[in-house]
Amino acid sequence: MKTFTITPAEIDKKWILIDAEGVVLGRLASIVAMRLRGKHKATFTPSMDMGDNVIIINADKVQLTGRKRDKPNYWHTGYPGGIKSRTTGQILEGAHPERVVMQAVKRMLPGNRLSATLMTNLRVYAGTEHPHEAQQPEVLDVKALNSKNTRTRS
Image: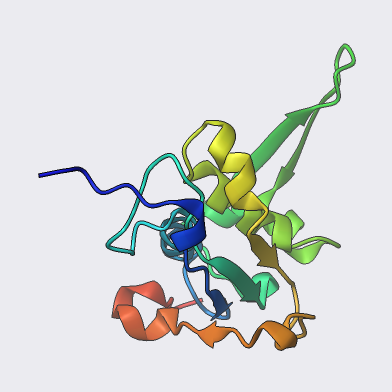
């Protein structure tokens, strides 16, 4: 019995559209990371980019459980004393709320060179509009997958 290994010519990539409105951030990120990696396919090969292209809309309306909205996010400018922070709530209400979703998905991918390639297959938009209608994306209803994927209380 030989081990099956897929070749790049055999990879079938689809376009998936996910509406993030009312969906819990961590659950959304784990589903998207699995789709980007290709683990939902029977022909999964760990060393290849065989996942789907994922489009996320309404990233500004994603939900956080507990007190994660008040959790600070730190970064350093590279200069002495250059540590800065913003809470997750401030980022979601700011000019680029899609960065919260992108960071959550990135941290659920493996920390190797393949991760950077997989992140190029992710497109996140704060509003409902996206320029990928020509790809005819299939809609994946994350809310219907599990009742815990949505937040009932605000």
